[in-house]
Length: 338
Image 1 (cartoon, helix red, strand yellow):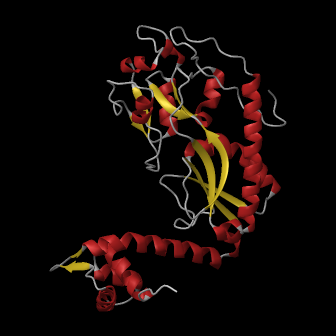
Image 2: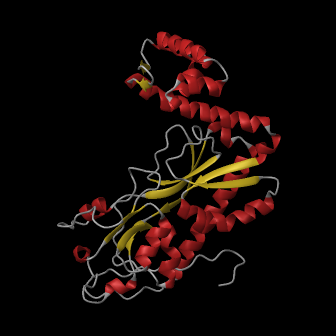
Image 3: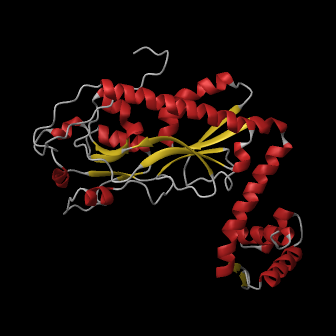
């Protein structure tokens, strides 16, 4: 079993480090400043390292204190979430899901009504992923991730693969500077859809340009967005070319409001996956949701493959041998009118 310092000492340090004040930490924990100082000194003695520099009228964290504080803060936040759920029986049937904004809006939310109809006693809460989420650290039941799929220590349920392509308005295919080959990107604006969660493995223009031997282009030039909606509006308005996952733009490709100027995917494989913990996967609401999610993902893949198979090929763009503006057909769910 791990040997941890006394919990009260850890709480005292976390509060003092957050406020950089023994007095404010004492007010929060309903003790005296002297008690906070005593607990911090005891913790420093236990760890064999100074956590604060004590100035005349202020505190400063040492390097050891700065290294320790974020982990303690996350730990106490997770404890608070767990305790709050235990205190209220109504929370036992709350299912908290974190998902990328585009996946949530375009795929999950339109389908979640079926899950709620089948399980009316389970309250569903969907939060957008504004940073890299973790089911243990963040107290989330199911985390949907879009990435290259490395999730050590987590239960992973693969949903479906995604290719990432350059997309743009069809207006860019003609005019004074027609976009007909990758080299023509030198004359067009690169629009960057950056990871809202700061994922270092997120698709980027530098990797795509290098993979397709396109030189003499600054891969960082052009506007950067972390919102899929902002990115979509920019490319629909004809402001430039962006790298986008299939799911995010499939309706626009089907309608012809966006096109793939060339069929050259991003040089890496991506997928949507559902992450849970070992304990979470045995929780009944989580299990029911993951089973439903697997069925919906499998149906989505079948329907999409059927539409692509039925699709008639689009004539190639002049000047790009073998490449054509790709258009995906709309996804039609069972029971929906065409």
